[in-house]
Every structure is written in C-alpha cells, then in structure tokens.
Length: 262
Length: 232
Image 1 (cartoon, rainbow over the protein chains, first blue to last red):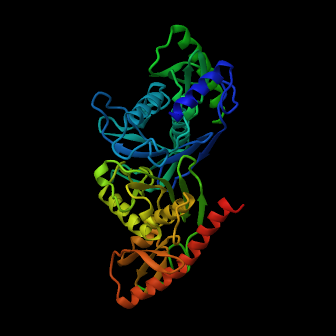
Image 2 (spheres, helix red, strand yellow):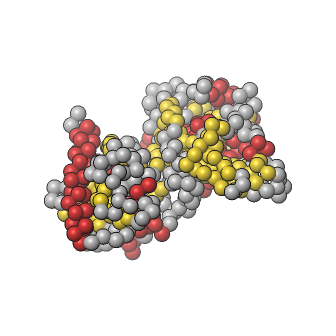
Image 3 (cartoon, rainbow over the protein chains, first blue to last red):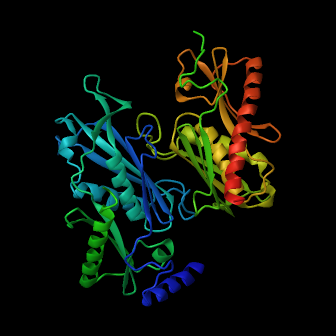
C-alpha cells in the first residue's frame, strides 16, 4: 500500500522531470569503488557503493578440465547471491530467480560476450587443464540498481585479481602465494540499466523508483560503444524508438562510468 | 617442542588489531562490522517480524534465528561452496545460544528476530567475530538488552595459553586446544563455550581467566562503536 503511494509519487514527479532525491534523469548516485577488500584468500575483490546500494565481489581461480567442445579454452563461472542481510525482501535458501538472472545476464554475459577475457589464454594444457575463473558477487545493501553495481564490482574485482601460484608438476595450486600476473582484460564491459516509467527514461534507479518501473533494459557496452549484452525486464513492452533512446543513454553513461577505472 | 614465541610475534595475551563499526547496512534494523586481525564479520538484524511458516511460531516468546555464512571467496584455499553446510548450521545455532541470554524474547511472542552474519574475510576466530558483531547489531536495532555479548577464541598450545588464536596456531602440528568463549562482559557469565582438543581442568580455568581479560578489551571496542554511532 505504502509502496503504491510512493510509486505514484515517483511517477507524478517524473512527469515534471523531477526525481525523489533531486537527481537529473540521467544522473547516477555517487559511486565508490574499493579494491582488495578480501584479498587474504580471494585472488581479487572489490566493493562498490552506488548511493546506498552496496555490493561486494570476489574472484577465486581453479584449475579444471576444459569443455570437450573448447579444449583449448578456460572459462568463467558467475554467481550472484542476494543476501537476506541486505534487504528484508530477500530470503535464505537456494538462489532466487532474480539472483540467477543477474548472474547470467549481467556478470556472465557481460564478461563472456564482450570477449573481455581471452579464454584461450586461460588454457594451461590443451584438452587437459585450464584456468576457471569463479566470480561471486554478494549484495550488502539493496537500494536499487543492483545490476549495475554488480557489473561494476565484478569488473573491479577482475581488474584486482592476481593468479595464484600453480605447480604444474604436482598439479596443485598454492593459494598462499600470488603471482604478479593479472587477468588480462581487453575490454571493460559496463552494464547500464535504463528504466522506463510511463514515457520517461531514468538511470540508476533507487528501490522506490524500481517499484514504479514499467520496463527496464540493461545494456552492456564495451570500450568502443558496441553493445555486448542486453536484458529486458519489467511487465511493459518497449517500442523500437524506446530501445534506441535507451541504448543511447546507456552508451553515454557507460563511457562515463568507464572513467572510474583508470 | 616448547611454544615460546607466537607465529605472528604477538605476546601470549595479545589480541590482534580489533575495530568495530555500527550501522553499516541502511536497510537493516540494526547492523555492525567487526574486524579482528584479517577476519571481517558483518552482521545485520531484521525484526521482530512475523515468523513464517506459522508452525515455527512460539506463542510464549519470540524466536531468535542466526544465520552464519562464509562468502565463497573468504576461506583459505579453494572457493567455499555457497549455501548452508553442516558447519555453518552449527555455528548459527551456537550463535543463537550465545546471544539469547541478553535478550528478553518474551516481549515478542509469535515473532522472529533474524540475525544474518556474513564473513567477508576469514583468518580464524570467525564464530567469535560473528557473535561480537551480532551483539552490536542487536544493540543498534534497539532491543532492550541485559548486556552485550563479546567473544574470543583462546587456545592452549603446549603449556601456553594463547589469546585470539590465529590460523597458523589452529593448525599447530603438535596439537592444540581451540576454545571459543563468549561472555556477558558485565557479569562474566559464559554464553558460549566450545573446545576442540585436550585440556586439563586447571588449564581450562586459566583459559576462562584469560578470556575474561580479552573480553574486557573487546567490550570496550564495542561500547566505543556504539558511542560513536549514538553519542556523537
């Protein structure tokens, strides 16, 4: 009930191009990135705050057998946990549909489809051994736009990573020792979620704004502005015109956000 | 082989660096972060809220539910599989028992108070760090409490009693006793006591005496964190 009143208010304000917290329609909240927040055992980690939304991501690396159809490639495995610690809306138990959607559409697709990581370089011995990069993101506080925060946090954590020492003869990883070698990133895929509320488009929605959402489109772009992943959500359909406008906004914002990473 | 010097050079009764911060998760009714050495615990409290499913409700008093979880990249070595394990379930249970004595659950029949403890980074002493953070989070949530709860892991290695056991000490080759203790610091009543390994009664007495002193220091950091949040 209360949510409905706020949603109506958000919508009415947007008609006059205003937002509850006074931001412009295409303005993000303050973003803070902190690297190495859990590097005692993680190969890389980062914490990202977007306003009051907070997310932490960590990277672990393992050596495994390559998939038979790509014997000379390593891979990534992405996982997102929406912790009940971060919101009264999230419950304990197996991963929710929402967390699976985020893991697949933002993290996995963003990194994999952008070809940001050259999977061939993760191969140790063709058909036998390759590196597997395990990406885990956790919500610490949800005040909307978890998708973009998770995208930024996982990218920062990958940039923060160093390979552990691997003894090829003994076929063992020594996690207590890190090498100087980082994960080479050819692109910085940045997801930007654009919300359509009635006929207005906004970025970086707060929880109140997400509750008023008509449709959303998460658009991941790479350095030269090409789109590498899309995910539509919300119950309202989009027109071609909408999509064009939303992509334009996301490309512009993606460029700005990319500057947060030197 | 006598244990004359600790692996990390600390004195036998010396804690690692500790710090605490209250109110770190805006969504939660109460929250806190507690660091001891490299171990970082975050706790959030939600409730009292209606307990579902209904058959779990207690018409006489509220239910305290603690959930302990290590983030998958926080362990030492390989990735920890997400989701509950036998270990995390047990630690959740003993955390409930460690915290319950300071609360008056009779005020909340039919309700649940949920405490979520997440370990961001671990280097021994995680259950104690979790309980210490959770006590702060409960205070932050504004529950009437008889006292705080402070916890510390004490060890016995050879003939020495060591405070705030490190990972290296936990893995001491000659065998050791690892004894996590939680107390209500004002009365020194014990709310958590576990042990892995061997100790004599006189050693155990020594352990509890030592724990009392360490807990005084942790209690001070907890109080300071609460003051920082509410009196400044």
